Image (tube, rainbow, N blue to C red; front, side, top):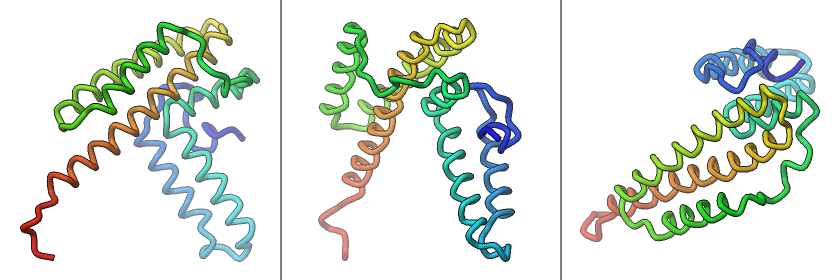
Length: 171
């Protein structure tokens, strides 16, 4: 059974994330070790459910998984060789490193989300036309930007923590 079937979802890049989470919680309850006599089997199944959820909940890993279902997921760990993309990626990384205010991060977040949205569209075209080399390249780029988005969110948390910290606060 593939991960999409496990959660009763269509095999596609675009999935209903709310339905995924609902099915995940339902399955976790069903296979909870405290609700069965075969605790070892329940732990194995629970671990499988967690792994499947983790993969399907992120667009980059979901795209890689779709390639895997088509036996086209090899070399996804190779470096990106698109020089123009690498220049843009370096510039975005530098903007993130230099960002000191929430507004800067918010602007960068919008830009990165636009990249992700564009790469998702590109992946769908590559996948549908079975252009596996391009699809793999797009997954590599998606992985980069999903990681950048996570780093932006961490930076936002740090800035918010710094803004909330006041030396006059009572400890």
